[in-house]
Length: 233
Length: 233
DNA sequence: CTCAATAATATGTGCAGACATATAAAAAAT
DNA sequence: ATTTTTTATATGTCTGCACATATTATTGAG
Image (cartoon, rainbow over all chains, first blue to last red; front, side, top):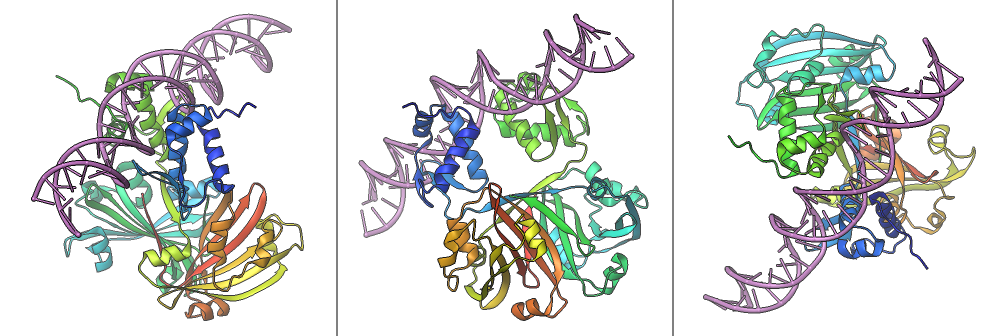
């Protein structure tokens, strides 16, 4: 009897998944080490490593040096979300993109924003509110605070035609950021802009980006009713 | 002058990012091929490959065989979301987990669900509603449809103590799924369960999982007001 | 001129071997 | 008994080489 040969990392991965699903290896079990698996599968250890590493990335395995590889107790599935530029998101859906600036001013950020951005108290920030439309219908309101210390050039940029979202993505590289997804009830201000009822449930993305330790910008995107963010796992 | 040596893939990656951020390579530019970069960096091509592949995964580069590697026009950032088991999410936050089944019945799924799950019209499904609590306060309502054809064992499972969320994760492997995030306004039913005002904006996750082509289950998770889902990028 | 066959090329991935590194377990010192 | 040091081991990753594969560019046939 000739056993099948797994000579590429995807095949090895599939076999490992098959064994986990088939309860050959149970939750929490230590699985054989890479060298043994390589021998069994008739391939190089590097190939097994690639397969197992990829499964660890997706949360199905837990690996630790010396301790070995075990089947994750809670198979925490990881979904990857693509965060596109708003204009691209709208045009990719086949709609006509529109943009308008609502307001622009300098002001101290309110405490929650200041805390998130780790700012000195009373730092003057650039505050922008604008709206993105799809086929002339409100799509999302962008309320943004920009730290002029981190982006001096910002003072001379005209955001009446180009959204800060797009300008920042194109011009200011960032090294890290955090995102929060949540829901709010529309207040009067937002309801007016999005042309929806006051109190209506709206999807919200809050994002703060940094370069090294310095906060660049913090934005709240409030989407029109019915907005959905999709992904697969 | 001795140029620095990049003898590990993270260092190569950092240097490449530095060049993109520093506009040495601009958006849309074709960058040198792996062999040339390897020579320049004084490392093996495999090391450059690892670095560039990882950057392509994160959306900063676009790569195509023969065509080469270019800096992405829209640096679509990708955020990875961890989708944990609800009980684990709550206990990890340091709260006391509680669970209760609200209802259990057999019924035909409503059309939107039936479509999402690609079911025959009128297939009888198992319908479950339950609630998860954190420190005795409502945390999330789980409304779930389960396809008994895909999970025959489901009929004999008691969900009065163990949530379908947890039972399914532990017992039914799935190969694929899709997730939608959105916001709704609380209707009376949900408002009662979550002890919130009618109309309040609530964060919602809809998830459908499949094994091969067969739909296993479709679930709507409606979170209590104030819920946030966090990640980094 | 158009379309199909062919060659060239950049990435994708495999292999064997080596060394690096984290860390669990064992041994030694206190 | 407790802490520190050492050792063993599984994963992490680099190297140099080879071949696979997708796709563009070139060439050739009609």
